[in-house]
Length: 196
Image (cartoon, rainbow, N blue to C red):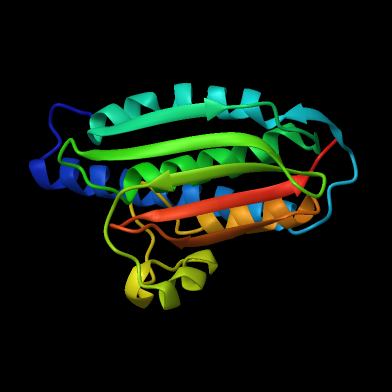
């Protein structure tokens, strides 16, 4: 494909095959992460979700800028215990979901907050602008390979496992995740975990 003598058809076929391979790699990685997150985490370390929020917001800044979405962060201390990499994946998936399913005309925003909640819990909440989400469709978003309106797809940027991974990671840590439509469009998604 990279030879000078390669025809345009061969180069195009090569690019298509590389893209298909990359999609399959994302799908396999997502499925492996989902399988890992299905089991309760037994090897736990102290983790402050505020640190993870700050890190994820910084890491996703280039994508947010490219999508013309403003990201706001309110990282208050939220101490818990668990697998730091899985918890980072939970927050990353929530933030990426908020960026990708948003208004991309310069008016869209995502707000990421962490903090404590009553009952010995800590939370990470991601609120975003975006298209209106019917309340009856919200639970569908947590099923693997699902999008709004029952669409099942694997796209170039994701394998359609993001929110199912979020739910599995939260449950493996003794918590859960909830979502509801935001008035005016978009979602409010909150992961609740035990406080350390």
